[in-house]
Length: 336
Image 1 (tube, rainbow, N blue to C red):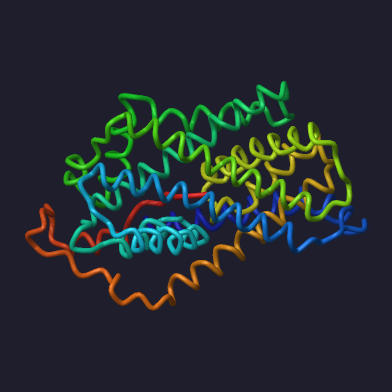
Image 2 (image 1 turned 90 degrees about the horizontal axis):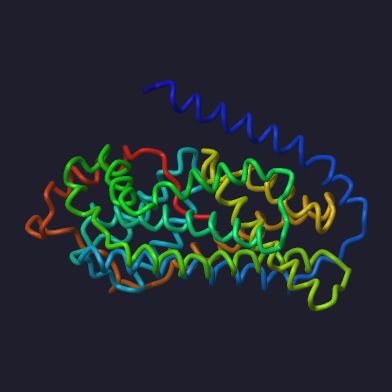
């Protein structure tokens, strides 16, 4: 439908305008204060983020193996990290396109590679929603946006309910893979549990990244118990803010994630520091993603190039038709 791209751009502009309006005053207040911009802390934040991404990539590898695929480890890591940049394109389908194209080889077929991306995405978002909610409840804190938090958690957890999980992936995949996806979207629920745990590690590291950013632009030193509480709050805030950005279809949750992160951190660190942290987290992660993706893209690893999928490799549709289908996939996001 020709009006969908226009609607997507209009929604993106509306969300960005609203988030910009909400962040403008706190950011102006933050810039009037003196901050210590600590490069070591920001480097720690970037490192924690990239290591967290590795745990999600690990789960993608597990899903591919469960679907009978045998990706080379280097090829998979390269595809996952480079594919992360696709989330900044409106529609977010480019994440799936890049990852499936780069991991595709004589040992990895296109359809299961795409199905695995959807499994990893839904599991990661469900893990973040559940972990964020549990941490907030453990901290005896229910933020002003608590009602929205509950709606987001329910919306993201529903697709991974046993009995719904495989059906949800089949429904999401069928528009571009046809009935062929039905034979692949049959993951065992034991893999779902493994994915929830692995992705929880990712969310803890991403929350730690936000905590490092906060420490890197603040002179205030807190006692150990208070730092631990702040770290837990950062984990919950990053998890729920990223889930919100996943549900609201803007590129990489741009605007949505910053606003929710600010609202969840503000009761603890103040509106100005929360707004500054939300923006710096975005900038730090983007820089880390670009640098790593650039290195992986240029890495001279000729032996890891993915050969074409042979016609008799078990595909139920020609490789050419599946490649064309990738370019017309529905809008879905993979990652924080």
